[in-house]
Amino acid sequence: MHFTWRRGLLRLSTGAGWPSSLRFSHQSCLGFGCFCSRSPPIEVAMDPDHNAPHSMGTTIIGVTYDGGVVLGADSRTSTGMYVANRTSDKITQLTDNVYICRSGSAADSQIVSDYVRYFLHQHTIQLGQPATVKVAANLVRLLSYQNKNMLQMGVIVGGWDKYEGAQIYSVPLGGTILRQPFAIGGSGSSYLYGFFDKEWKEGMSKDEAEKLVVEAVSLAIARDGASGGVVRTVTINADGVTRNFYTGDSLPLWHEELEPQDSLLDILSSSSAEPMST
Image (cartoon, rainbow, N blue to C red; front, top):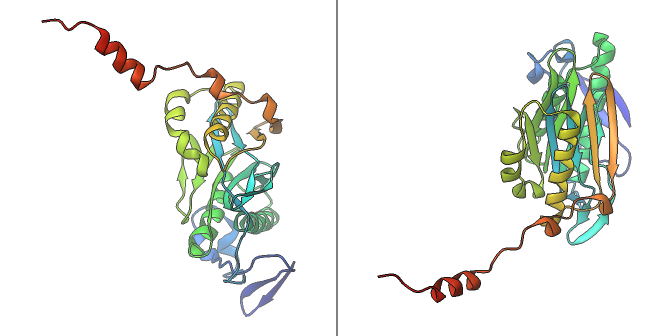
């Protein structure tokens, strides 16, 4: 991939297989402590007619705990009904202390992650210090919003920095950004809202947060046909980054833990057998 300046625009010449046609204006990033105010407007030229056949019908999760964040995801990548990859890695590194969980079109989320990683590297060189989590999340937001008619992806950006500590940002389809204590996304998230309302709490320890993430992804895998494979987690705090990997045979089996329930017919028959009081 080659970067050349021409008439105030940064043109990216990409090799075969790279999607093309992302637009990016640095001026929109002012106010977030980013390097954008020092650089001319940038346009990332990509082909508007690209299609992304591989989709990550996914479960992605980000949880804050007392001192850091835990990110988690399943590993299934599919093409329609065909499972193209059972062990893909959907948690991508942006900087030493910031990671992104990707869902939606695999091609879209990968190319956005690559561009954001490049811009953050440029930021670090120009300012002489690592980019904050907020800067990384807002760069993702800019690319997502300015290309919302072409991109089909939703992401969670999480990390730790010395200014604001542990942070989780959700950037769904369309480019909205929202900072949350926890975030869930992907097709498996529909089954997890009630679970998190009950189980998440402030001040969790690192082990409690990771256990919650693993259980939540396992529950989504058990209920969502588009999620599957193994569970990967990334823990980020002041001490650094820790990656963990949970194979399918080590995950909780939710169908074995559910208590047996009486069917509707059993309930009706038992109630009709009771004598009616007058």
